[in-house]
Image (cartoon, rainbow, N blue to C red; front, side, top):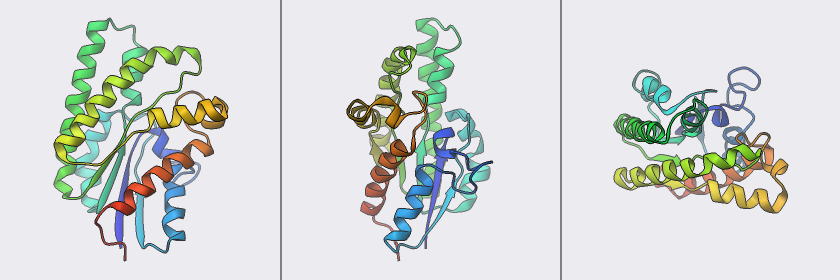
Length: 209
C-alpha cells in the first residue's frame, strides 16, 4: 500500500474538516476515486487546512505530518501568502520583503519534508483575473511560482504548473466554469487538478501494488 499525504490550504481542504470528511469534496477525493478505478492500493491523507499559509504548514510539518510516514507528499500552498501581501496595504518594498520571507519559509518546509525521504510533488499556486481586482495579484503569483519552481529543481522534486493551464481552460469554458470566486475551484477545476496530479503520481517509481 502506498501512503499519499496531501498538504495545502482551503483548495486542498475543500470541506474535509467539516462538510466532507475525511478527503473533502475536491481534487483529493477525485484523485482517490481515480486510483481506486485503476485498482491501485493507496491510503490517502488529506491534511489541507482552510486558511493555512506556508508558515502554518511549516509549523505542523515535523509533529503532525512526518509521523504518518508517507510514501509521497503533495503540496499546494502560496495563495494565502499572496493574499497577506495584497490585502494589508503594503508598499512594494514590503511586498518584496514578504515574498523573500515566504520563499525562505517554503525552502525550510521542503527541508523538513525531505526528512520523509519520499517524493514531494509541488503544485503551482494560481489565481484567476475574476473579479477584476485579482489581476493585480498575477505578477506576485508569477514571482512566487518562479521561486517554487527553482526550489523544485534544487530539491529534485516534481513540479506541476497550474496557473496557465487553469486560466487557459477558464478562457475556453468561461470563468464561472472553473472558479467560484477567482481563487477556489469548481468541480470542473478540481477535475483538471486531479487529472494532472494523477498523471504525475503514476509516473513516480513507487510501489502501487
